[in-house]
Amino acid sequence: MTPKQQKFADKFIELGNKTEAAIKAGYSPKTAYSIGNENMKKPEIKAYIDKQLNEMHSETVASGQDVLEFLTKIMNGEQTESVVTNKGIVKGVEVSAKDRIKAAELIGKRHSLFTDKVEQTNTNIEIDVGDWSDDDE
Image (cartoon, rainbow, N blue to C red; front, side):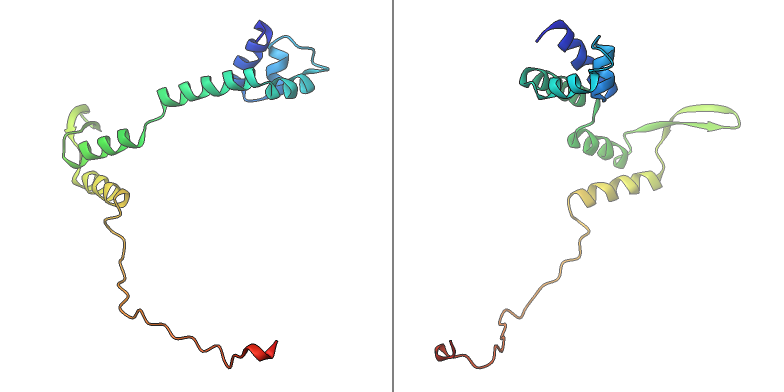
């Protein structure tokens, strides 16, 4: 990948627009649209962009495990918060019971604890399809 192509890829990651990225990377505004499309078809540029986006995603986005651990801390009363009162900001306040219940509810939904289960007892199904004979063909 050339330095200009890498600059295009970096600008595309930043801007999310192929034409703008091509212009910012130094390509002619007249050909920026087609160059942007061409560059996005090149495997090495596409692979570079995908790799960079995956790294950014894994560093900035909470995983499902992170969310469950956070909700569990809230539910168990291990998480505190800052509260604004007329006397100022009070830090280290226990999370309210309402928030703890909501955290428990979200965890319960994740583990399907609250789904309605219907038990079917009749396993014999009869269907009347009328008269049937192989001679009717």
